[in-house]
Length: 277
Image (tube, rainbow, N blue to C red; front, side):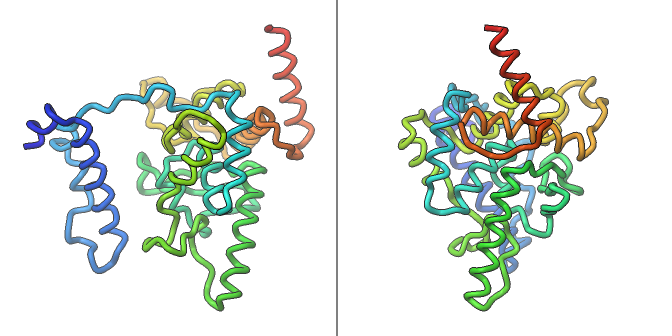
């Protein structure tokens, strides 16, 4: 049946698969329904091989000159949780769901690192840095969440990007606010996955090595050489992730105070760019 529908309506088949996948994931998050459907049912190779091949959307990526307008309108979103979440997607290149369900117990603001669920390393997750500007957003969310919980006389939410309306307790549908921000900024549509693609593309423009970017994003190694490259320490990752973030904010013309080494790095990039032109 799927083969017949795939030939006639490939887009509808892909959409139906995504709905089914989301439904099965939801079942696993609700204790009374856990185990009714095998959690990995939608991962069956027979099913995946029968799906229409996904095509990369043309232009589903922010460009350097888009950053000022994008940040301006995303920062203006009235819900600070959605605003911080969208900025977090762009500044980490994380997958939508792995960042959405991040819990405070997996965040260390002093050490500037967080551990995300990871589709490659499912047992241990992926630990990545929290660069300074993003850490400041997290700090504000934590303070606001604790104040709200105290006002309501309840325990704070375990989730960084909590949702008071979503059954699962964390942010569920940020696309509407993001699409509205894109319209206000007069930018072409960029999906949430496009923000992950944007991080990978623009981080290279900031001078970061592709292997380092891949380690932050949790990309599966795609070549024999990559499988054996030296894993960078959290200290090295934080140093470079801070430079990447600072470059993003500079392009967006957002004032944020960084240390002298980071300022010098940006100055060197500007000089190199000027000389190159």
